Image (cartoon, rainbow, N blue to C red; front, top):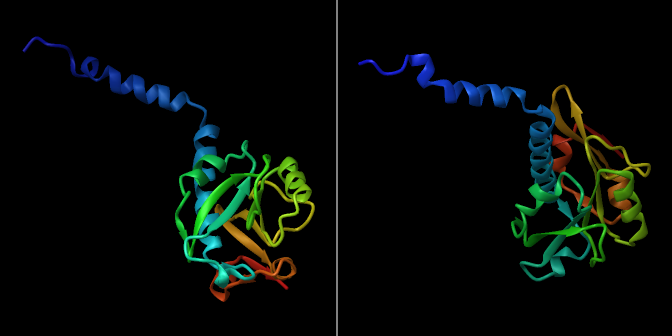
Amino acid sequence: MGGLPGWWRSWPVWLAGVVLALLPMGDALAVERGALEAAIVFNVLQFVEWPNENALPDGSPLTLCLRSDSPLMAPARLLEGRAVRRMALHVARLDAPVGPCQAVYVDSASAEQDARNGAREPALVIGASDFRPAARPAIQLVFAEGRLAFDIDQRQAKQSGLSISSRLLRLARTVSE
């Protein structure tokens, strides 16, 4: 019965709690935010139709391009190969020579420049929630009222020959024609 006092036996739990409390929250929030944005980007892709998409064989790649230093790269890679309607998601580096990109995630001035340098039309340009590209994207992620939402610019999508489903339009925070 002698044993150690109860509080002494639980010191590893207390130590773990103190260590966790002292960890920087920014890194944890960045990982969570990246995963959330990756999931939203993936779901948005489900509701966009590219020109001549119906002529492609089933399982053709739908290429999402983003910079290798993007916080979205790791979470997006976890979605590699997932079905996007009849196509399969392929994640590629925007800052390396690649084939055509059907979707481009722009989260920095460097990503915007890379997207501009490579003629990747028709491409769905998606702006990150914490970056506003100079050229307005078709989809702009935004944090509003404590949640992640998105705005749609139909004109930009139509200029790229893309068709956005009315179901996605209804979910958007704003839609501009």
